[in-house]
Image (cartoon, helix red, strand yellow):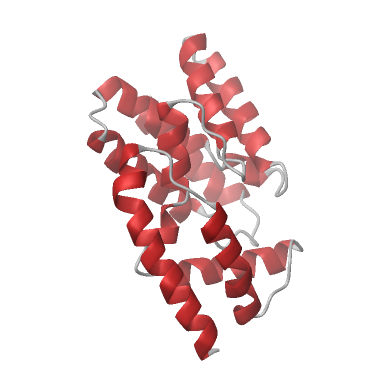
Length: 194
């Protein structure tokens, strides 16, 4: 099932994703897939539960092909329709949909699956290449008409996000939070340079 969904989502994002989605691309979706596997294994998830996490990651941003604002709900609808058509158990669908809906900022996870998906979705805050990643987001916002910031304005704005955001899973609290703090310090230094 996971491989089938991976091919499906890959094709959808390749052919239907608007050109303005510089950050929320297929690359991001597959990055989140890798991240949920990492956190899921750290959390001692069995293979069946890892597969649920993988489906959460694959479906979580597919809604961008329909709308920018409101993509989370569209992703949940797409996942529900697809999984019901494949006769997946309602309880599994509820877990996946709940996790997808939890990624809407501000994130509100209510179980371990949604905690892991939320953390995996915002792991870019911890990356060594954070500035390259976030510049894609800045361009995407500009092209999508969300906001047009200079690089310095964007970084000043992002400090508030860094400070209001928190990781939810055990891995997020233990490992990611510290890396995010390091990147926050890099952002502050970058603002001083600009």
